[in-house]
Amino acid sequence: MKTYLEQYKPGENVEEFFLVKSAVIRTANSGNRYGDLVLADKTGEMAGKIWDLNQEVLPVISALAEREIVKVRGTVTEWNGTRQLKILRIRLRREEDCLELSDFIKAAPFSGEEMYQRVMGFVESIKDTDYMMIAMSLLTEYKEKLLYFPAAMRHHHAELGGLLYHILRMLENAQAMCGVYGFLNRDLLLCGVMLHDIAKLEEIDADRFGMAQAYTFEGQMLGHIIQGIKIVDRAAAELKLPEEKRIMLEHMLLSHHYEPEYGSPKKPLFPEAEILHYLDLIDARVYDMELALKNTEPGSFSEKVFTMDNRRLYKAKEKEE
Ligand SMILES: [Fe+2]
Ligand SMILES: [Fe+2]
Image 1 (cartoon, rainbow, N blue to C red):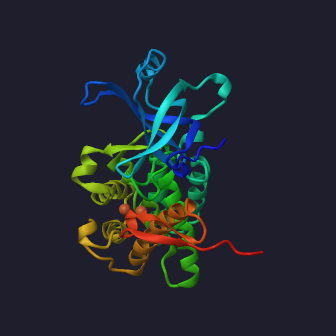
Image 2: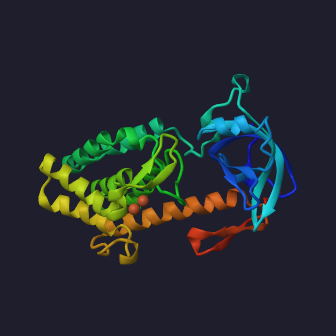
């Protein structure tokens, strides 16, 4: 199936299935009513407008619920520098269309269950029983949410299974770094990676499709660093972790954003904490770069990347064979 919303250009005709993220009927200044939709696929989203609410269209829009899949026919137009779809026809998906919701949801490249098993493989490789126990206990407690949660509201890893994907890639990088810097405490570093963003599960409200809705009240007020320290503190008390290990782990959570303006009141005070910060940064940056370059033509520059100080990234020309 071809649904590449990102690639449609103004003037192009579209006849395609999309996921409806929202659908409302609004009244324009002129008094005319129109349908205002947000359509999405794996690659992005676009506003869709239905200017002619005729008898054929009106019942469809009125009955539309979020997460519904529709087939639309229309033309891509541009308004205020943003593309939108002028919808001429719309219908709900039919059974014979054989479409799955997952075909339209932006998702990590592996299933939640597969990534979870791989992360648990790392947990089992931790030799220090205290670090192993706390990682095992919290990843087990939060398993259900971990399987689908995104890693962020917007930007890096804001997708189905994004948080686990982020943790997994950081673990793989951490593993490689321990091979280079043999003096590192691998158990502590791995445990810190596993738990550094665990409280995102309580900071953000997300649905089963990995779409973040909003920050929770506690998330808004405290943020995942402080929430994470509360979680580790509670689990460490239950498991009777020695004080030094608990505090070192908490310090890793506390310092992983590095700068006070990003929520860390202290900078890392030992190598594993310093490395955790950079592993986190690298994984977020590489994710954003990979995504921006995916929809860029070889030999040209990407759109501005907001998370990278609005840099426009360059995609190399394809190699000649
Ligand atoms: Fe974080
Ligand atoms: Fe992170």
